[in-house]
Structure formats: structure tokens, C-alpha cells
Length: 263
Image (cartoon, rainbow, N blue to C red; front, side, top):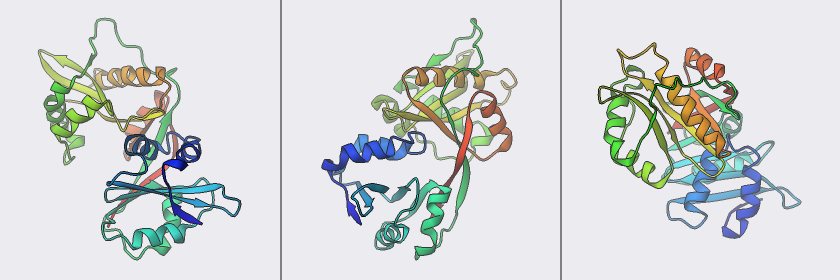
């Protein structure tokens, strides 16, 4: 049975998704941030015959995210999405999303699949040289951070919004650590979608001309260590195997693939 969830379902729902805090980073963060009664968000639950929750479907704005650790009513979730004129994006763990695919009346225009990795401890993180100053960004650094991202070739074409970055830093949904040379921000690592249990690492990069110094790895070491000290599990996406090898050397392990489909 599928029904829309309410505030009365919070405890059961959060216990269900918290078993996999990295995999459910977005669902946990959205429920903590917007709850069950927001105009921009809805949450449905799929219950088995005994009343036990076996699947969750979250809609935030135009984006749907399903989660179910085993079998669930994929057709029922698909019918909810098929009946929604605003349905534009579907994202989630590959095997969960693929169960929905046969029941969707739309075909994704640009399906994208990325590797999904998590980190639970800082044992393999590189030590930061004592003479190197790793600075934590403040909201006023938002423009500098987005300008840096736009100047790094591997991030070319990304959607970087300084106002959104500022708001995320102000509200504590994100943080950033960076390195300067001669007053210029040359390398950084950021988090996004932070919640009480997990956080995603993004924006790890170095400006051309300042590479091969380990700067990005040092920034990442600091931000990851800080988040892990707070008891947050870390996760990230990557689609470049070379980048994946770097992440694995510092303690990340693959936990599957993540679909991002646009309709």
C-alpha cells in the first residue's frame, strides 16, 4: 500500500532511511530541511501487508528520488510520477531507479549514471603540511568560490551560482575549505547537502598552473576530517575512473551507481 506520509510518520521514515545515510543523503536532508508539509516537497511510503515501511519516494520541486533496500511497489511509485505534470527529474541508486523504468510513460532525454562512493573514516587522509594554510570559507567568499570553479577545465559547463552558494554557506547546508597564493583562491574542496548524518563532497579542484602540489587533496583531507569528526558519513559522485582512484586512495569505497535522468 502506498500513501503520502505526514509528520506523524517522521520517526518511522527517518529510522528507515537512516540505515543507509550515504545512499539517502538527499532524502534525509530534504526531510530535515522541509518536513512533510512543505509546498515544495511531498513524501510517499510503500508499506507491506504488516504495515512495515519498505520504500520511500520523495518529490522535491520537479525531482523524484526513490529508495527501497529490497522489493517495492515500483509500478505504484511510477504511477505517482506519471500523473505529475511537473515531473522532470528522477535520481537515485541505479538498481532502484531501473525497477521504475518499465512503468514510466516518459523516456529520459539525457540519462546519466555516475559512480557513487562513501567514506566512513579519515585513516587514509593525507597529512597537511604545517606551513600550509587551509582556510574555511565564509559566505562573502561565494563569488570567489564560483569563479574558481568556472576557471577549472574539468568543471567547465557546470551550473555555479554565487547567490545559491552564499545561502548554502549561511544556512550550514555547505562548507568550503580553500588555499590561497598571493591573495588568489587556487584550490578548494566543498560539501553540499549536509544533514545531521551525512554530507556530499563536491568542487574538489585546483586552478591550472597550481596543480601537482597536492592542494586539492589537502583541502579534501581537512573538510573530510572535520565532517567525520562530527559523525557525518561522506559520499561523492564521480564519472572519471582516474578521479575515482584518487578518492579510493584516501578512503572512499564504491557503493554503487547513481542515476540522474532528465525528462
